[in-house]
Length: 153
Length: 281
Image (cartoon, rainbow over all chains, first blue to last red; front, side, top):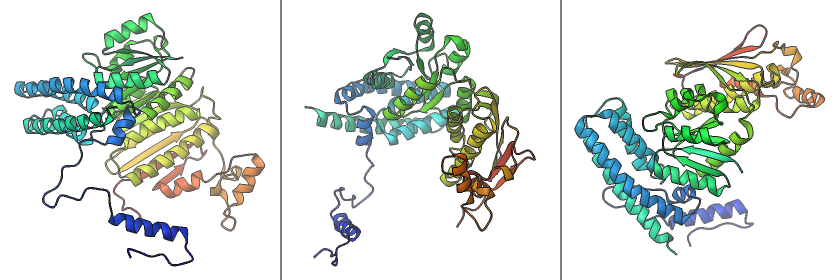
């Protein structure tokens, strides 16, 4: 026996017992035993809400993003090489806007930090932050492809 | 069908917003920069412009300052930049509303609908001072302007503890609506003066309405005037005056603000929230 509810049954007692039992059989994947599992690159529900469930539009946006993210990441790298924080901030800002379409909170936050520091004229550590953002963008693109695959009729 | 001009340089957002608006039945024209926007505006009539702030070369808000009021449709700003400077520039440029990225479709459509319905014919909010630590505005006495300015100013306090922010927002809303409804008699040709001062350790609001003021013995419909032994006495008065249920505004505001003072005529109110106060246990 996993739990019990004494009679007469009160709905709220029954519900809380069901919740207690259900919580032991969580549908969430178990936590990684060693080290932390990286959090998901995107929130799928918010992603679909953003395109109002339109899989075709989403596929189109993913294609645009793949092209633009390459250009923008390369442009940010060049800005760092040139020691040009203004250009870095401005491209990072455009990249933030682009990321905002995909419910990608982590990448969004990383790009925001890159922009904030560049706006303050700070380039120290910018290369590492950009590499980190590029890696997160790669994860995001993989996650987007997985969603697209799932949406295929 | 309404015609909307979308000015956005980043093409993933442009594509998505275009599609969301078009699917909702709007006619949409999209451009990626300010010169193209100017060309479109000179050739066609639009009911609304959705404008990004950071555009190549010309900033979207600069674009607005170049347009005569009569030559531009109502404007909703869309931006990932919600710094106080940009917020205040948007108010100064008479933007109707501001939507921050990431853009959520339902919210976008709601703001667009509201702007289309209301923007024409509403006198603008005037900016008298727009330093992030000293904002002074003249707000027309209508409920809709009050709601709009409240949503702008709430963003200035985005860095505060949610409970403090919420308390300030509720007091401001209550005091502003009182000023607009009772002081300004909902006449949009009259203004309420709003001053917001941000110090290191406190926030101060002053709201001055264009009315004659009031005496507490005249506002028996407000819970603040109830005798101690009759905490609901104002309800009878509200029913007699045909007012909606409520009347707890001043009472609630006094408990949420750290200081709240009226001038002698009671047509100006100042309230303060200290930022280093211990949260209530």
